Image (cartoon, rainbow, N blue to C red):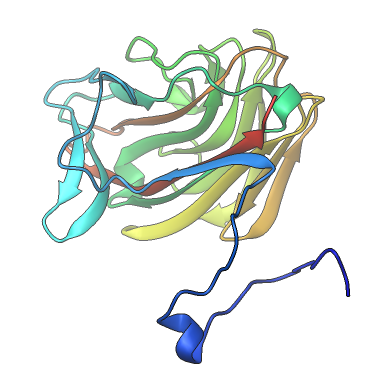
Length: 245
C-alpha cells in the first residue's frame, strides 16, 4: 500500500462522507496554514491587525449583515489610502504564500493593493505600491503583490514588487477588473525572493528577485481615485501559509 497519496486537483467528499465525519486520525500539516474568514463580531486591531484609516471618512470593519468579510470604505478624499496589515510574521526562507478573495465595487474610482510588505502601514497619500499619476512607485522598501489602480489603465490588474528600496517592478496580467467582480488573488514567494502571482487558481505573473530577505506582513491598501467619492473594497478571507522554522 502506498505511504503517500498525491492529489493534483481536489479531494471531494460526497454521499455520506459529505455529511458525516470523514477523517480518521490526527492531522498535522507540515506548513503553517490558517484562514481568517473575518467572521468575528469585530475586527481585532489590537492583536490581529494594524489598521490605518488614512483618508477623509475612510472606514474599515467586518461586513456582517448576513455575510462574512472585511469591508473597506475608501472615503471622499481623493488619492488618500487606508491600510490593513498583519504582524511581520513572514520570511522568504519559509516560502510564504497568501490569498484573498477581493471585490471592488467601482474599479475606475479605486486603488487597491494586496500582497506582502515590510511595513504594515504607510502614510497616505502614498500606498505600499501604487500608481498615482500613472507611474508605479513604492513607499515600502520590500513588497510584492497585486495592484489595481484607476490611475494605471483604469481597470488593469498588475503584479508589482520592490526589492531593497530599488525601482518598482510591474507586470500587466492582461486581466481587466469589472465593477462588483470578485477575484481570488494569491501571492507566493520562494526562498530566493522570487514572486509568483495567481488569479482564480491560474498563474498570471512572475517577478524575479521581487523582495529581499526581511520580515514581511500581509497587507491590504484601498483608496479613492479620480475624485470618485466613497467606494467599497471587500475581502472575504485571508489565507496564509509558510514553512515552519
